[in-house]
View 1: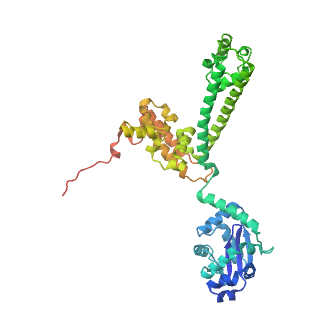
View 2: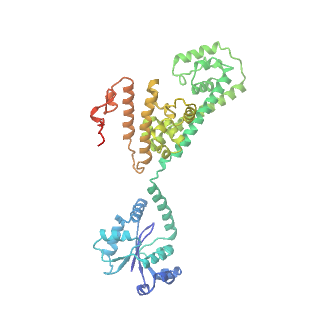
View 3: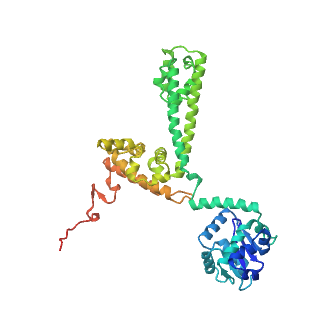
Length: 451
């Protein structure tokens, strides 16, 4: 009797050394008689042939096929080589662990002369084989091949990880936890940068108060403080690399000459400049973090990003807890996500409920007139809910994500926006003409009198 055994390293065929003893032994006694220890197991089973997998992808496809009871390409070629073209005797039985796999082998290999067996005895044989797999796989010679126990355990670990990723369709680029952490840190950085920049302006304002009204950008203000220091140096310093507008530069130089600020010491300037360096370093890190968030959002939720942008999409995912949680929400919930306090306050006081939450900051809603923002937010939330479900439930093993839903949804929202602003309404919906449903698409109700 031959045994077809699948391992994480490859396919193998074992032969029972004493078939007469096996035929006389009951299934309950097989383990005691054949697999009491490793020596008995090695003497009872001989490794005839072993074919390793080509790579991890081959191992995953073979394992998936075996789980589903199908015959993969590697198994088919192995059985053809060993049993059909090899020296297998006619009428010899081949033990298969899975009955569904045995029936698939019969269909795929009709020329196979071996009798396929799967019963209580073979189950006990496979149980003993799995118990002493390391010792039996090492027993192969140079012709039959084999694999060491340490290599086999490493292959087991690698295959289990790869198979789990395949079954869950997991991709490292699709982890939405990174987006949640990144957008949270981005919001905190904005607060810290504003706080530090305000402190720089207030501190340096004692020396040069007029510059705060001329230069509004925090990064430019900090660069000027680092470059010039004392206001007396502004006149002789070239600020063209910091300020793009020449009029602003001339205004600063004029204000520095007639400034009403107080004099400060060198130690004060050193501390103010060190704080300005902190503002610039955090501003640079914020730009890097935003680029990272942008790339992550394009990988995780490309359709949602096309509709609402990276920041709004990331905040929606963060507020919902995960991309899958957001995909489970209806469009009405997506529309007011982030405005829960206003919603419950409106329900409690019996006032009008809010029309938008975090989605209000999307560029498409910003383009709408104030009276149309509620309508556009409802349309955008409907498209965003559909796009989120596509992103969360689509096949993640594809190399390039399908962004058709995102682009089509954005086009429809823009068409609806043009319609509300007085543009061409025919693009918004093919079923609408002049704001009314066409008669051929509207179901009519004809009352019928009761008999």
